[in-house]
Length: 414
Ligand code: ASP
Ligand code: MG
Image (tube, rainbow, N blue to C red; front, top):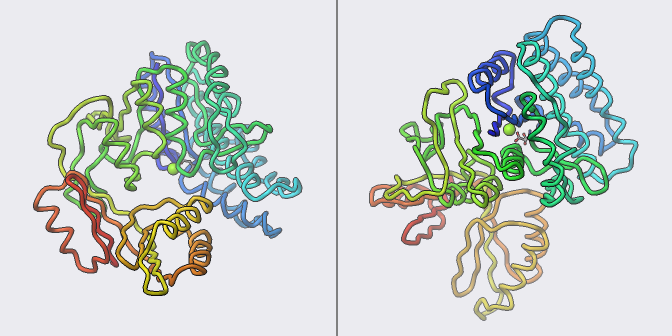
């Protein structure tokens, strides 16, 4: 059995959804579970709805726009008056009722934002049925169980594995279509697994089902050694070891969600990244393999913040002070992307999530003189060669650099 995942771009309009149908026809005949994201930028719009509801403001403008967008897609796929049109409309129009439930923001967010995936899978299923494909729509929340950490649900693997046992039977009767990104919490509410989490959902199902592979359908030819929008001469990898792919996601390559690799690697399930518009292209196969001489991999991570903590007297930075910095980072759940120390200062580079980072800076200011700089880009060159090593170190605006035998990182002010 196989697991396929289609992201928001692959279902963003009627034409894209027709292509999903074509791909599923092409690969029919094998038990398949299909994981689908919310359409286009729906999740961002739903985030705004959740924020408005939390602030007790009316989200009616956003909701109208979401209804109109989805109705247009439905009109491009299904006959007029198809019952799905009403069902979808009601799901959006009913969203404000979550504001009455006195939920904390994160829990409210998940109840609202998960609607994107529920709606997209309903529309795609209805269309596939129309195309005479045997489809079973299932609610992912009846299979994937998480703890109560809203917006970042941690999967309960034992419970999830047990619930997934009934899926193979269902997959023998039709293509199972389900939502990415969402799960059910221990207290019975919806949780989400972190932004862009649908890849992770595909990996969870594959691991629990012992699938033969997961295929992520993308708008790129496969995993590339750089973002082709930034570096037009980027090349596509034919194959990549799991470890290499996992490290890429750590440095910020956005092609696969960072949590996706681990469950697949643990179960030896290959991950294929293939081109949605051109399925004849070979794409990239990520699996347990050794590749010698990978070309340099270049990852740009924008929106970085450099924070430097200086001691205020003539002492040097010492371990006790470092431990205060790390405690603050851990308590605020901020990940370090790069760090460096000198005699009198300790510098860290983190994603600039404003509220969290300003909070951190405020905490550190009681101990150190703190300087910070935002709007920076962290460039990581993994498996560098002499040419890329020199080129990236000499980039204009380098504020900080660090290298090991395999990896160079430079922080620049663009
Ligand atoms: N729809 C969710 C998001 O945009 C999950 C996903 O696309 O993977 O973050
Ligand atoms: Mg997405």
